[in-house]
Image (cartoon, rainbow, N blue to C red; front, top):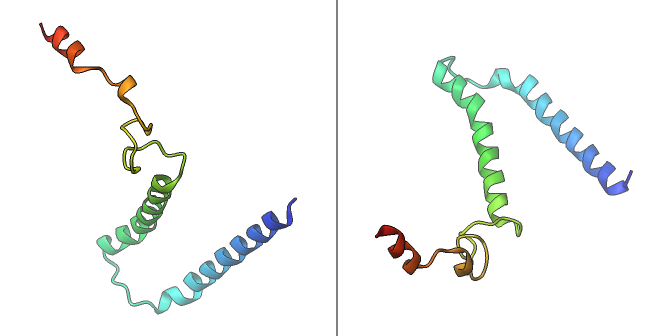
Length: 95
């Protein structure tokens, strides 16, 4: 295994252990009301945060084929007119 990969895995495990310890021993000190909206928020919020981070990461990826990239067409290609039907062919179909 690559040394860089092992170091990353070790850091990831240490971070997970630290978060787990903080929740286990620090959680009871939080004065959170035991109501359903709070519980649902605690369950759903991490998922929404990760979805937002991954979505933003995907939009910034060079492999993303979205129209949000500057100067790109709807297919993520510089000039996508070859893939777009011309207006004359649309007029012929309407008749």
